[in-house]
Image (tube, rainbow, N blue to C red; front, side):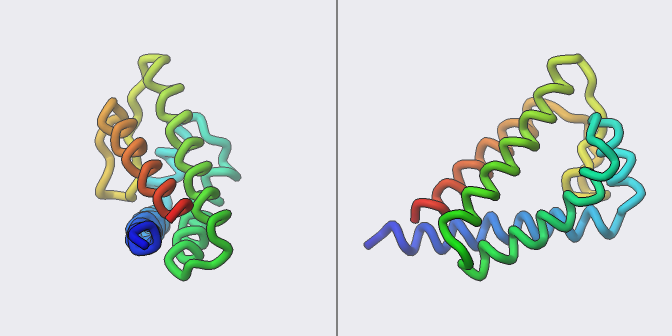
Length: 128
């Protein structure tokens, strides 16, 4: 079956992306806290985000609790996208901080498109 290899590859890709994003945020934690605050994210939620990304990414890479862990990744990505869209609709474009110091560019349509692609990869991991 082709679905299983696609699911494994998709899970590995989205898992690595999540782990990398979480580690990047922790390596520039003050910048991440500022970015999260600028995006209107509660301080306690912003503090949890890197850890949730690392744990979920690792669980999906290890193929634990599939498809639910992959659906959790999709739900988190939808949440991130809602936060981005909310800021864009307000005309506010704070720095992303999505991947730590590597992503300080102001929020824009590119971030929404990137997340849409990540969501598709997450869905493939869930159904594969």
